[in-house]
Image (cartoon, rainbow, N blue to C red; front, side, top):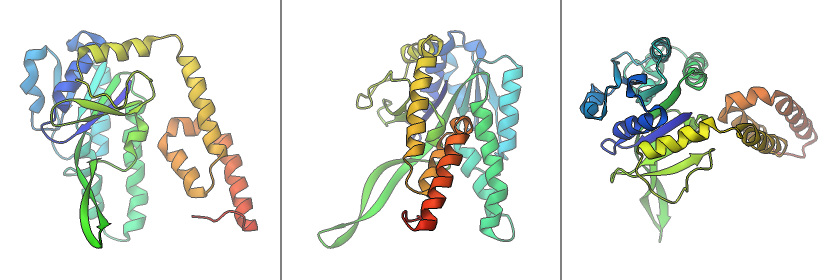
Length: 276
């Protein structure tokens, strides 16, 4: 399972992650919390004997990768990364590294993006279940209301690279009442409108889904849907977005991407599709 739990400070991300992990594997001695939050994971030791890996600055992608690999070597079955926001916005993370680099800003991103992507791919390829917490903050847009430009609250925005939620099988959004709503669910287990407590029972349901025999059928269904979306892409930008949203599936469907890219380029040359 690749799962993300995002929410503001105090919403219960760490506590919920540990309960979910307990439901996933029962034995908390096989669970590790990679703790970037100033030893906050120690606050919940009453839940059981899980492991804590204290993680301090610099929060570079390479150090996160090393922490995942050390957890796997130690035989951990669930890796909780609390939180991955530090890899993006923390000291020594991607944004600070970019700010400190001399030269052309755009060119510098070409050096940093592969480092970030390597971290993402290491999470996706882990031999353990991965639960990643993401800090979030309230996001606003400026809207025109009766001739006046006013800020309008549009929900919580995760502190990480845009579209990171595409990488996960499940994404839960925590509220300040410690309940969560699912914002992405490839398992089909949860109602997106129903808030719930993230507890052992939820973790157990996810574990059962992971062990079901009909995953091949589910994968085939998703694969068919993904291929159709590639074939229906109407611009190069849309095609690139599909490629970025799930690198694993992108590799499996390389022939579809190549074919549609050729078709779009041909249409662009003929002027029949506007390149965005």
